[in-house]
Amino acid sequence: DAGVIQSPRHEVTEMGQEVTLRCKPISGHDYLFWYRQTMMRGLELLIYFNNNVPIDDSGMPEDRFSAKMPNASFSTLKIQPSEPRDSAVYFCASSPWTGRSSGANVLTFGAGSRLTVL
Amino acid sequence: EDQVTQSPEALRLQEGESSSLNCSYTVSGLRGLFWYRQDPGKGPEFLFTLYSAGEEKEKERLKATLTKKESFLHITAPKPEDSATYLCAVRYNDMRFGAGTRLTVKP
Image 1 (tube, rainbow over the protein chains, first blue to last red):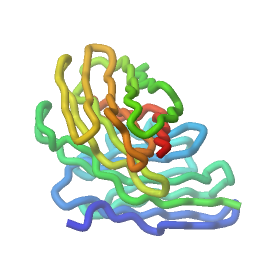
Image 2: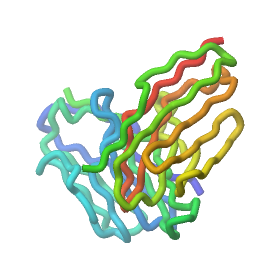
Image 3: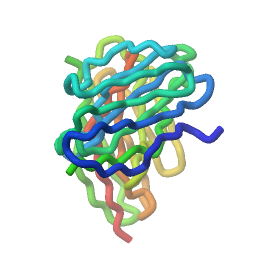
């Protein structure tokens, strides 16, 4: 398996523009997570999906952020309009869930998308 | 509110100087405590999962332990290649991360 695939790896845009980040999870994983990482706030959970359904989006900063998972192999995180404070590394991660004691309940992360909003 | 707190924020060691990193948590219904390693410019990489107080896991120079309120990552005789940020996370249904400990091992 190629692992979790994110695109683009780097994005530089101007304030007010729309940004779309993409993620392909590992095949067979039931859960998909979007995180944002900054020096100041560390890794913050934005939203997660179970079987393509959004379960908890309480970490989404505001209405400018939206996430979708139209099928089991694809998810997007969209920021519209973007602002300089959205500059961060955005990670997608996926996970199976096979029970409390299973070592398989591990998140596998993608390489991240580094977003710079000027 | 569920909390995951890691200490210290940064740790500088000489090669061969053993030490421990701490992760304390306040999560009800814990479904696993996880340790990850993150190198600059990369995503976090899984190291260990612990589920029950008293459980221990080992991998090369690293050993993770768990109590009811905290976990320790012990590093024995570290090498420069162990330099990285070590992240602790707790899982209920979602996964919440601590701020990490940035470890530097000098030769």
